[in-house]
Image 1 (cartoon, rainbow, N blue to C red):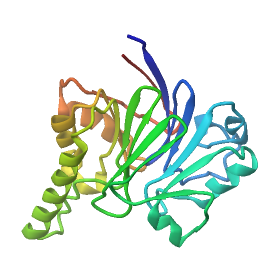
Image 2 (image 1 turned 180 degrees about the vertical axis):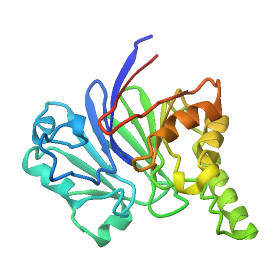
Image 3 (image 1 turned 90 degrees about the vertical axis):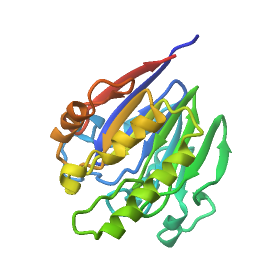
Image 4 (image 1 turned 45 degrees about the vertical axis):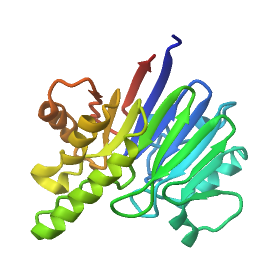
Length: 247
């Protein structure tokens, strides 16, 4: 069986660049760091040099919240006119163009050799499942188990039910790599979505996200979850590279 190698770079919060054999996927790029001296992936910036490639580039935006979306992504076409954009339908309120593919939850589209399926969110927009180069990659966006201490018992029950219902829909897929929120603002309940995702779907690799600059939460999650069949990435800084190989 042929090995599938993928390289993942953490670009801050919920943003990642994922490079497979033939394709580059960029999710939820939001912090372009205009003041950084070296515009490199190591500093969390997608530079013009990285965009000059023979590989196909697909840019995804799960929703229009400012910590997931920066309109600067559309300027990248000036460097590489072949970039394709797959956007949650709510981005139409910001930028409406027939040059881009807009998607609602529970839609499927195919672009070249990649298949894209959308699922719902427990906040705004969509989550994405991308089938590319023999890999199934899931990016949750703001699909999370939002257990806020300020919520009433009834509100907490709704949040739990909505998250679990959505995960039940995602379960129809074998997922290799999953990007799942572990938000420190939820305090001791930060891990709920990640643990449930691992228990129900068992991805080969889980990449924590949506934690701002609280990188310690990744190691905290690893210790909390314990030994499972799912590997959990330990992200220690912006620009962190994660290499992963699966058969």
